Amino acid sequence: MRELDSYLAELIKAQLENRIAAALPSSISVNQIVEVAVQNQMKYLLLGALVRVPNLVEEEREHLRKHVIRCVLRTAVQVKELGELEQSFEKAGVVNQPMKGAVLRFLYPSPEMREMSDIDILIAEQNMETASAILKQRGYLLSESIKHHDIYMNPPFLIVEAHRAMYDKTVDRNQYGYFSNFSRTKVKEGCRYTQVFGKEDFYVYMMSHMAKHFYQTGCGIRHLVDIYIYLNAYRNSMDRKYVEQELDRCGILTFTIHMEQLAFEWLDGGKLSPFHEKLFAYMLDSGIYGKDENGIWNKFVYQKGSDKEMSRGQLKRWYFFPPLYYMSEYYPYLEKKPWLLPWAWLVRGVCGIFEHKGSFKRKMIDHIDKEQIQTLKTIYEEMELRFKP
Image (cartoon, rainbow, N blue to C red; front, side):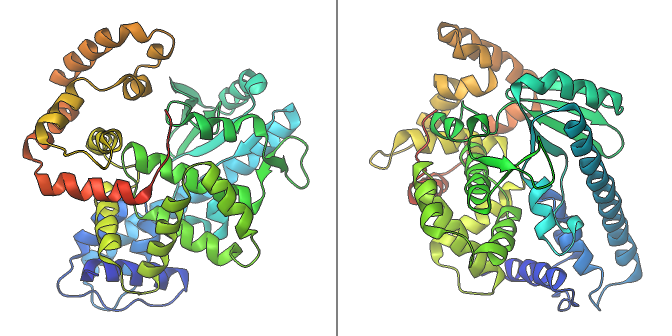
């Protein structure tokens, strides 16, 4: 394991255990840690530990304190808002379910250790208008409606994503059906309309959400910390046989096993296998939400299969003329009008000419070598993700 990877684990464990971390190694700079923390939304978890190590200068500590204070303030506002939203939805009879970090953060020693850029809440389809009215009454403005959720903003700290569905059907039809219609939830204790998963079903959902990001654009190392926290809290009380059965139904059992092994190998200081070293490096580079360019060649790898040689030329053709299932993620009208695929290719091409992301992807394809393609191919084959867009 690289020294940086080991020291990241040391900082995280020190923060979780409320102790002083080991001194910053001379080969690692404060800016390197800050970059990882920002890209992976782990500022309080990493920088809150780093600010206390003995061998920093005061200017460095002051810079880190600013990051940490912002995290504390944001978390305090979000936690208060989540509680008040639950009360408002209960009063109005809105069937809702807090998602992802809104639940996970309360398993950490303190909520600010699990950052959230927004509050994700699933809303029953028949209650979306009522929920929208409540959010607007609380000072939110609808920023954007995309795919299966609406984004509401209330500056400076508050963003709420009101989801119509727990899972995106354009990624995997099977998992979309699996999580639909609050079929695996129960009413939260003390509530009438707020729904929650049991600990087994939440873990299946948590890993499904991670696998979705990994499949689409890659995902960052914070997901590994989530796994570590969740399993340390519930591993001895979960029905593992049920969990593995449901993970297998969702096509993510092998993926989950690899991620569990990697999480504990990394954070407990074990020796990573050569494959897990490559996987960790890929995740660390991806950042919290992955990278758009990963979405191009990840799906290319997935589509080509393990028995076919892959080249830069094939990747270029795939990039310029992606298949229908990929294009439908970004041009939803193709789901009902697939014959407009050539038009969507044209629109995508024109937009790419004027957007930095488009030129960056083309540059990435021009510089990718056969070894890089093979590395990603190996990762995706080992993960055995069985997605059916």
